[in-house]
Each structure stands twice: as C-alpha cells, then as structure tokens.
Length: 144
Image 1 (tube, rainbow, N blue to C red):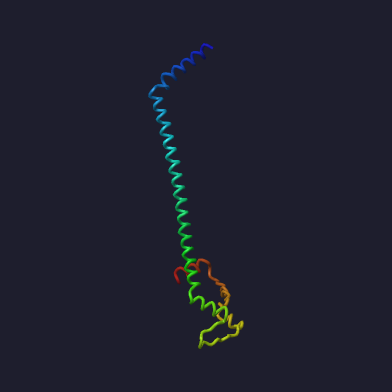
Image 2: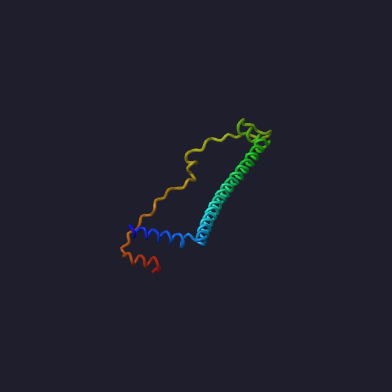
C-alpha cells in the first residue's frame, strides 16, 4: 500500500511539474486552435466547391432553358409565317395555286420498293489449305 501511495505521489508530481507547465499548456491550446482552424478551412472549402458546382449546374440549366425558349419562339414565328400556312394548306386541304396541276401517283410496287436495298451476300467459302500454320503466317507476313 505504501508503494502504491509513493507511485501515485511520483506520478502526481511528474504530471504537475513536467506536463502541466505553462509552456505545455500554451502549446496544447495552440495545437487545438490549429486543428480547429484547419478543420474549418477544409469544411468551408468543400462547402464552397459544392456550392460552385451547384451554381454551374443551374447556369447550364438556365442556358439550356433559354436556348429551348428561343427555339420555340422561332418555331412559333415560322408557324405564323405565310410560307408555312401555304404549305400546310397545300398538304392538308389539297390547295393549289392558279396554273398548277395536281398529279396523283400510284403507290410503288414491291419491286420498286426493294430495288435499291442492299443485297445480302454470303461470305465466300473458306478454301482449305494444306499448308501448315507457320507457312501460312510466313506467306501472310512476307508475301512469299
């Protein structure tokens, strides 16, 4: 028991006079302040980066919406134009200008529809070669 008391007194003395000195307390406070400042700087930087990304995304959305709005305005102007109205009247009501003749064409036949389609060709039969694999590579690479 006496030994334990002695050890506790030694520990108390060492703590009081070696660790809890004015310089060590100031150093610990400075370390805590540096950590707090570093943490705050990193968190504010990351928050600013996230906000900048959000702002950039919103600006892209805004420019896209403005472009779509301009496109719709141009489409509306085109639909209001006399040129479109004339084309729509010709298409929907079979209208024609004076002096024009309407020609009605028959539907295309099956042979006319399939005339220009690409023909399906089968690959040529591979010719069996009695040369060895190395000889074939030699011929391929060196043309001999």
